Length: 243
Image (cartoon, rainbow, N blue to C red; front, side, top):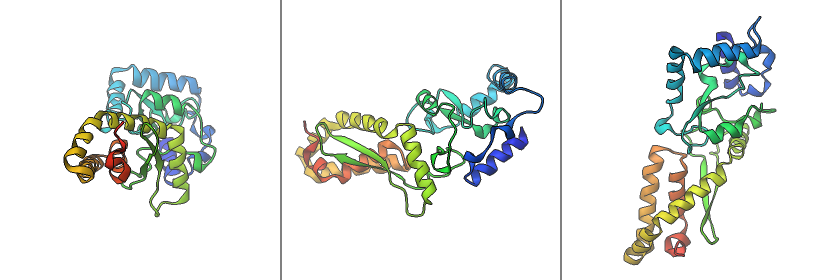
């Protein structure tokens, strides 16, 4: 199992997780079902000593925020490579990714068929030191934000494709848009008062400050990106939020 974990890490570093074969990740002499049952379910989920490790891995994300979507509350551990097909990785810490219920369901037990369709691993793919999440205000009633992947020029194309696949797989554009609309609804009265008092500049200054504060905490967080998009939209700052 230690050797399987090292093969997993090496493949991740080389961008070839999609090339791994489940036949390389069995435990000799023990069926996949028994490995999962005795090592993972009985040894880690229900065993007191193992459960302490399970809970520590589950509690790793900051603010209990799901690292797959950056929004939901962690409720489980998801096997990045399915435990039934890769039993030798069933308790490998880097194959156990904290996840919210929706992301766990969306990912399911599917396997990537190509490098471009491999979801981003929150710990093995170091992407959050770059700003890659963007949004634009859609001119509609009510106001709607369109979220999308806007990668930096230094990213290789395969990483761009993977980020866009990840974005689509977990339904992040509509998820973030719904949350952004709630922000607009919650601050509409405050923005109206600011517009009446200090005009467009005051509204923009407030939105920019809120964006800076949130992005300093989470560079690709939907909240900070929401405020930044609103601050950059002249029509919004001049009163398009008034319904």
